[in-house]
Amino acid sequence: MDPEDLGRALAAQSRDRRTFLIHSLNPEGSHDIVGKINVTDVVRGRFESAAVGYDAYDPYAGRGLFAEGLRLVLNLAFAPQAAGGMGLHRVAASVQPGNVRSAGLLRSLGFQWEGGFSPRMLWLPGADGSHGWRDHLSYVVRAEDWPADPYVAASTRRVVTLVNGMASSSKTALARQLAAELKVPLFLDDVIRGSQPGALWGLLQDSPPGGVVAGWFPPQDIQRVADGLDRCGLAPGATPEVWCYSAGEQSLTRPLGLGPTVAVDMGQDIGAADIVRIALQVQATGTFPAFET
Image (cartoon, rainbow, N blue to C red; front, top):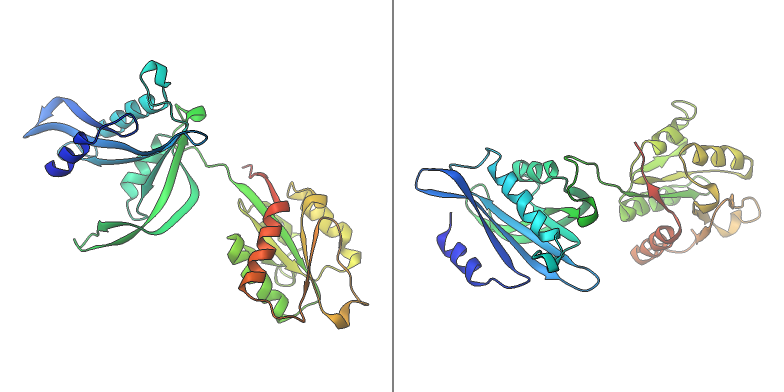
C-alpha cells in the first residue's frame, strides 16, 4: 500500500472524482483496508462515462472481499445523482494483458472486453520492478446491463466483405492488407474449397468478427456465394464486394454485384492510403448484427 498515493487521492475528491476505501469487518494484521477504488476521468453530457482504477491489499487479496466492495462501488456509480449516486452510463477499466487475476475479477462482475487494445498506455512498473509504458486491454460495463451476469460474452459487430477478381498475387496481397486493417480473419477460397466442399462458409459462419473472403468468383458462382452468405446469416445484398480488375481483363470478367461494389484498378499502385480508404468503405456498408453463438 502506498500511503502517499492514498493521501493524494483522498485530497482530490470532487463530484466527478471519487475514491472509495473498502474496509474489512473482521480486520487482520496491521490494517483493515481491503482495497482502494478510484472513479476518475468522468465525462458528462452525451458520454456519462468514467474510468475505474483499483488496488487490493494484503492480507485480504484473493479472498473475494474486494469483488464485493467493487460491486458496491458500481452500484453507487450507476445510481442516479438525485439519489446520491454518480449517474454514470458506462464504466471502463484498463488492465495489462498479463494481469489475469485483475481481468478475471472484472469478468466475474460482468465487465466485457470489447476488443479495445491500447499499446504503451500507462507508465508502470513491470514484474522486474523496472518502469515502462505498458500495454492495456479495456473492459467495460454499462448501466443498462447492471447488475450484470458474470462472465457474459461481449457482443461484437461482424465485418464481412468479398474480395473478387481473377487469381493474382497482388489481389491476395490486397486481401491480406485489408484483413489486417479491418482486424478480421482472411479466408482464401482457392485454398479452402479444395479441402472440403462448403468449408469456406462454415469457417466464416463460426468467425465472431466476420472476415475477408477472397477468391475468383465468376458470374456463374452468384448462387453459390449468395447461398453461402445466407448460411452465415448475412444478407447478400448488403455484403460489399471489393472488385479487383485490370484493364486487360475488363472484357472477360465482371463483379458479382450482389451487394455494394468497391472497384479497384490493380494496374495502379495500391498504397496504405488506398487500403484504408477501401476498409472505410467496407466498414460503412459491411457491418452486421452481433455474432450469435
